[in-house]
Image 1 (cartoon, each protein chain N blue to C red):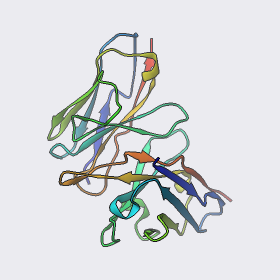
Image 2: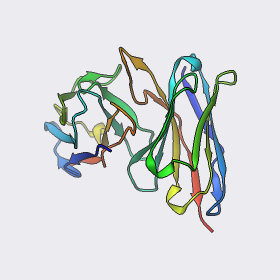
Image 3: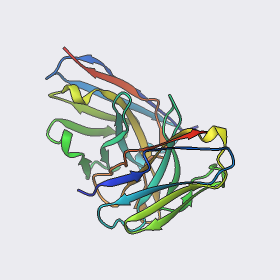
Image 4: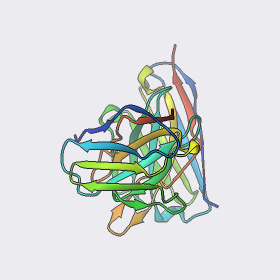
Length: 122
Length: 107
Protein backbone atom coordinates (compact mmCIF):
# COMPACT_ATOMS: atom_id res chain seq x y z
CA UNK A 1 0.00 0.00 0.00
CA UNK A 2 1.35 3.40 -0.99
CA UNK A 3 1.78 5.67 2.01
CA UNK A 4 3.05 9.21 2.32
CA UNK A 5 3.37 10.63 5.82
CA UNK A 6 4.33 14.25 6.36
CA UNK A 7 5.82 15.61 9.56
CA UNK A 8 7.64 18.66 10.83
CA UNK A 9 4.87 21.25 10.79
CA UNK A 10 4.14 23.57 13.64
CA UNK A 11 3.96 27.15 14.83
CA UNK A 12 6.88 29.37 13.87
CA UNK A 13 7.51 33.10 14.07
CA UNK A 14 7.83 35.24 10.94
CA UNK A 15 11.37 34.99 9.64
CA UNK A 16 11.84 31.57 11.15
CA UNK A 17 12.60 28.20 9.58
CA UNK A 18 11.05 24.76 9.46
CA UNK A 19 11.98 21.52 7.74
CA UNK A 20 9.15 19.33 6.56
CA UNK A 21 9.61 15.63 5.93
CA UNK A 22 7.59 13.14 3.95
CA UNK A 23 8.20 9.44 4.59
CA UNK A 24 7.28 7.24 1.65
CA UNK A 25 6.50 3.53 1.70
CA UNK A 26 4.80 0.90 -0.41
CA UNK A 27 6.42 1.86 -3.70
CA UNK A 28 9.82 2.37 -5.29
CA UNK A 29 10.50 5.93 -4.11
CA UNK A 30 13.61 6.29 -6.25
CA UNK A 31 11.49 5.83 -9.39
CA UNK A 32 9.23 8.84 -8.91
CA UNK A 33 9.26 12.60 -9.14
CA UNK A 34 7.80 14.08 -5.97
CA UNK A 35 6.01 17.33 -5.17
CA UNK A 36 4.93 19.60 -2.35
CA UNK A 37 1.52 21.27 -2.58
CA UNK A 38 0.05 23.61 0.03
CA UNK A 39 -3.38 24.84 0.98
CA UNK A 40 -3.92 27.93 3.10
CA UNK A 41 -6.87 27.73 5.52
CA UNK A 42 -10.12 27.92 3.56
CA UNK A 43 -8.26 28.53 0.30
CA UNK A 44 -7.40 26.59 -2.84
CA UNK A 45 -4.48 24.37 -3.71
CA UNK A 46 -1.10 25.85 -4.56
CA UNK A 47 1.72 23.83 -6.11
CA UNK A 48 4.97 24.65 -4.29
CA UNK A 49 7.81 22.59 -5.75
CA UNK A 50 8.81 19.34 -7.35
CA UNK A 51 11.97 17.28 -7.68
CA UNK A 52 13.27 14.67 -10.09
CA UNK A 53 14.33 11.24 -8.95
CA UNK A 54 18.07 12.05 -8.90
CA UNK A 55 17.62 15.68 -7.71
CA UNK A 56 18.99 16.92 -11.05
CA UNK A 57 15.86 19.00 -11.63
CA UNK A 58 13.99 21.06 -9.05
CA UNK A 59 11.28 23.61 -9.69
CA UNK A 60 9.53 26.13 -7.44
CA UNK A 61 6.61 28.52 -7.49
CA UNK A 62 7.89 32.10 -7.67
CA UNK A 63 6.62 33.02 -4.19
CA UNK A 64 9.00 30.57 -2.49
CA UNK A 65 12.07 30.79 -4.72
CA UNK A 66 15.17 31.62 -2.71
CA UNK A 67 13.43 30.75 0.58
CA UNK A 68 12.37 27.10 0.21
CA UNK A 69 14.51 24.14 -0.86
CA UNK A 70 13.14 20.78 -1.90
CA UNK A 71 15.35 17.73 -1.49
CA UNK A 72 15.15 13.99 -1.09
CA UNK A 73 17.07 11.07 0.38
CA UNK A 74 16.36 8.01 -1.73
CA UNK A 75 18.17 5.74 0.74
CA UNK A 76 15.70 6.82 3.41
CA UNK A 77 12.65 7.01 1.10
CA UNK A 78 12.13 10.56 2.24
CA UNK A 79 11.24 13.91 0.73
CA UNK A 80 12.03 17.21 2.43
CA UNK A 81 11.10 20.87 2.25
CA UNK A 82 13.42 23.30 3.99
CA UNK A 83 11.52 26.51 4.57
CA UNK A 84 13.43 29.65 5.55
CA UNK A 85 12.41 33.28 6.00
CA UNK A 86 8.85 32.20 6.65
CA UNK A 87 6.03 34.68 6.20
CA UNK A 88 2.45 34.78 7.42
CA UNK A 89 1.30 33.96 3.89
CA UNK A 90 3.16 30.64 4.07
CA UNK A 91 0.61 29.45 6.64
CA UNK A 92 -0.97 26.34 5.13
CA UNK A 93 -1.34 22.61 5.20
CA UNK A 94 1.59 21.18 3.25
CA UNK A 95 1.04 17.96 1.31
CA UNK A 96 3.58 15.76 -0.37
CA UNK A 97 2.47 13.96 -3.50
CA UNK A 98 3.83 11.29 -5.80
CA UNK A 99 4.24 12.12 -9.47
CA UNK A 100 4.27 9.09 -11.75
CA UNK A 101 5.50 9.09 -15.33
CA UNK A 102 2.84 8.18 -17.87
CA UNK A 103 4.27 7.90 -21.33
CA UNK A 104 6.52 10.91 -21.85
CA UNK A 105 4.92 13.06 -19.15
CA UNK A 106 5.25 13.30 -15.39
CA UNK A 107 1.76 13.75 -14.07
CA UNK A 108 0.52 15.41 -10.88
CA UNK A 109 -0.12 13.58 -7.64
CA UNK A 110 -1.69 10.17 -7.86
CA UNK A 111 -1.06 9.66 -4.13
CA UNK A 112 -1.03 12.34 -1.45
CA UNK A 113 -0.13 12.40 2.20
CA UNK A 114 -2.50 13.66 4.88
CA UNK A 115 -0.62 16.93 5.19
CA UNK A 116 1.16 18.82 7.96
CA UNK A 117 0.09 22.26 9.19
CA UNK A 118 2.53 25.13 9.17
CA UNK A 119 1.42 28.25 11.02
CA UNK A 120 3.53 31.39 10.78
CA UNK A 121 2.58 33.90 13.44
CA UNK A 122 4.09 36.03 16.18
CA UNK B 1 3.54 32.23 -16.10
CA UNK B 2 0.41 30.56 -17.44
CA UNK B 3 -2.74 31.28 -15.46
CA UNK B 4 -5.55 28.77 -14.98
CA UNK B 5 -9.09 30.09 -14.66
CA UNK B 6 -12.02 27.90 -13.67
CA UNK B 7 -15.69 28.68 -14.08
CA UNK B 8 -18.01 28.78 -12.38
CA UNK B 9 -16.55 29.32 -8.90
CA UNK B 10 -19.48 27.40 -7.47
CA UNK B 11 -22.57 25.63 -8.65
CA UNK B 12 -25.62 23.95 -7.21
CA UNK B 13 -27.31 21.13 -9.09
CA UNK B 14 -29.80 18.36 -8.44
CA UNK B 15 -28.97 14.71 -8.06
CA UNK B 16 -28.90 13.17 -11.52
CA UNK B 17 -28.06 16.42 -13.31
CA UNK B 18 -25.20 16.72 -15.75
CA UNK B 19 -22.58 19.12 -14.41
CA UNK B 20 -19.84 20.80 -16.43
CA UNK B 21 -16.87 22.74 -15.11
CA UNK B 22 -14.59 24.75 -17.38
CA UNK B 23 -10.88 25.43 -17.03
CA UNK B 24 -9.11 27.89 -19.30
CA UNK B 25 -5.35 28.31 -19.65
CA UNK B 26 -3.92 31.72 -20.54
CA UNK B 27 -1.63 29.98 -23.07
CA UNK B 28 -1.77 26.62 -24.78
CA UNK B 29 -0.80 23.63 -22.66
CA UNK B 30 -1.59 20.85 -25.14
CA UNK B 31 -3.28 18.12 -23.09
CA UNK B 32 -1.15 18.51 -19.94
CA UNK B 33 -4.10 19.03 -17.66
CA UNK B 34 -5.32 17.16 -14.60
CA UNK B 35 -8.49 17.38 -12.56
CA UNK B 36 -8.68 16.81 -8.79
CA UNK B 37 -11.59 16.34 -6.42
CA UNK B 38 -11.29 17.50 -2.82
CA UNK B 39 -14.11 16.58 -0.47
CA UNK B 40 -14.53 18.67 2.69
CA UNK B 41 -11.76 17.90 5.16
CA UNK B 42 -10.12 15.39 2.86
CA UNK B 43 -7.00 15.08 0.76
CA UNK B 44 -7.23 15.91 -2.96
CA UNK B 45 -7.87 12.96 -5.26
CA UNK B 46 -6.68 12.69 -8.86
CA UNK B 47 -9.63 12.15 -11.18
CA UNK B 48 -8.30 12.77 -14.67
CA UNK B 49 -4.93 13.39 -16.30
CA UNK B 50 -3.86 14.10 -19.86
CA UNK B 51 -7.11 16.09 -20.12
CA UNK B 52 -9.29 13.04 -20.67
CA UNK B 53 -7.72 9.91 -19.14
CA UNK B 54 -9.67 8.61 -16.16
CA UNK B 55 -7.50 7.66 -13.21
CA UNK B 56 -7.92 4.05 -12.08
CA UNK B 57 -10.90 3.56 -9.77
CA UNK B 58 -12.67 6.80 -10.68
CA UNK B 59 -16.35 6.33 -11.58
CA UNK B 60 -17.14 6.52 -15.27
CA UNK B 61 -19.65 9.34 -14.73
CA UNK B 62 -16.60 11.62 -14.63
CA UNK B 63 -15.09 12.65 -17.95
CA UNK B 64 -12.70 15.26 -19.23
CA UNK B 65 -12.13 16.88 -22.58
CA UNK B 66 -10.23 19.64 -24.29
CA UNK B 67 -6.78 20.60 -25.41
CA UNK B 68 -4.79 23.75 -25.94
CA UNK B 69 -6.44 26.37 -23.75
CA UNK B 70 -9.98 25.15 -23.05
CA UNK B 71 -10.89 22.15 -20.96
CA UNK B 72 -13.97 20.72 -19.32
CA UNK B 73 -14.73 18.30 -16.52
CA UNK B 74 -18.16 16.71 -16.72
CA UNK B 75 -20.15 14.66 -14.27
CA UNK B 76 -22.82 12.87 -16.28
CA UNK B 77 -25.19 12.23 -13.36
CA UNK B 78 -24.42 14.12 -10.17
CA UNK B 79 -24.42 11.98 -7.01
CA UNK B 80 -24.52 13.11 -3.37
CA UNK B 81 -20.96 11.82 -2.87
CA UNK B 82 -19.73 14.19 -5.60
CA UNK B 83 -20.13 17.20 -3.30
CA UNK B 84 -16.61 18.60 -3.34
CA UNK B 85 -14.37 21.29 -4.72
CA UNK B 86 -12.83 20.48 -8.08
CA UNK B 87 -9.48 21.83 -9.26
CA UNK B 88 -7.73 21.76 -12.60
CA UNK B 89 -3.92 21.76 -12.74
CA UNK B 90 -1.54 22.30 -15.64
CA UNK B 91 1.66 20.30 -15.79
CA UNK B 92 3.23 21.02 -19.17
CA UNK B 93 5.99 22.98 -17.46
CA UNK B 94 6.72 24.54 -14.08
CA UNK B 95 4.97 26.09 -12.28
CA UNK B 96 2.27 23.43 -12.14
CA UNK B 97 -0.46 25.96 -11.49
CA UNK B 98 -3.90 25.05 -10.14
CA UNK B 99 -7.15 26.73 -11.01
CA UNK B 100 -8.93 28.51 -8.17
CA UNK B 101 -11.45 25.69 -7.70
CA UNK B 102 -15.13 25.07 -8.33
CA UNK B 103 -17.35 24.14 -5.41
CA UNK B 104 -20.13 21.72 -6.31
CA UNK B 105 -23.17 21.42 -4.07
CA UNK B 106 -26.47 19.57 -4.21
CA UNK B 107 -29.58 21.65 -4.72
